[in-house]
Image 1 (cartoon, one colour):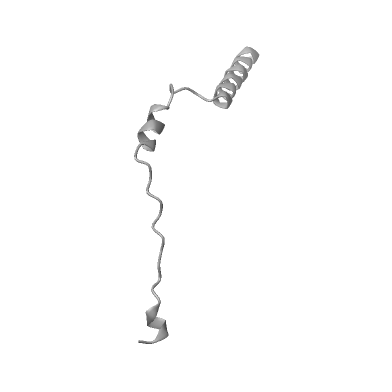
Image 2 (cartoon, rainbow, N blue to C red):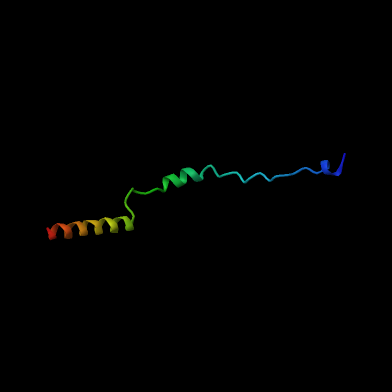
Length: 56
């Protein structure tokens, strides 16, 4: 055999995923509520709407 055929390419197998992580990550999800920035933006929209209505 030639020297090119003697060497095999070895690829390391990826580390197996922990099967317990996905359910644990799903359990830690909390109540569904708006983020602080979303709440702030909503309040600002309400304020601007109220100010617009006061002008008319």
